[in-house]
Image (cartoon, rainbow, N blue to C red):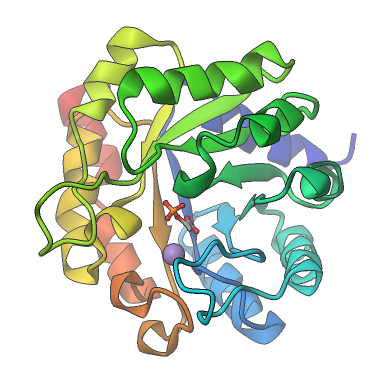
Length: 261
Ligand code: PEP
Ligand code: MN
């Protein structure tokens, strides 16, 4: 095993460890190589080693940008290798699970596919960690059963991600259910991370929700970050800049110490 593989294993183990805290950052969608390269270099300087980026986007409107597909995956792989970062990307298709498992380190299941049981079973046949987002209208029980589809099919490496649920409130894009953190910790042994980006839909709320998630004992956060957020093709309103990200993550170690998680 070379040094790159060793440090990726450390990151992977930390992501799956309920005593650890992982920070995942990167664009909603991969747009081009130069941009991802610049972003990854800056994230590394900030000691962030997990790079998200969508290549296949599940868009509500068929007219929205749907990602670069395989080209996006190969950009992601190249940049991940260059900076020795763990890569995270969404898998939306049962026929792409095997291919993606060889290119991308961590597979993401988006909210719209939480109950796509054949896809979940296919993820059970690979060993990559799977970040399973909560369905926007799903209960904890339904979410945990979805996780069991992956685990029972042979892959125990599941991380749950609360990304906000549908409520009557429409000021925020969704409603971040912070109660999911202690509840899931009571109901299961799986790590739980928070996505403050898709839950709030607004960059001005990412900081407070991240800190609240840390205080509530989350095992990580996934934050949409862009080199030039206003120009982000996808989810611009909720994407933060590198500078904003820095102020968001800086107090996390101290906060965790106070709370003693
Ligand atoms: C994402 O994280 O890229 C995404 C599409 O999120 P969600 O499935 O939570 O909407
Ligand atoms: Mn997004």
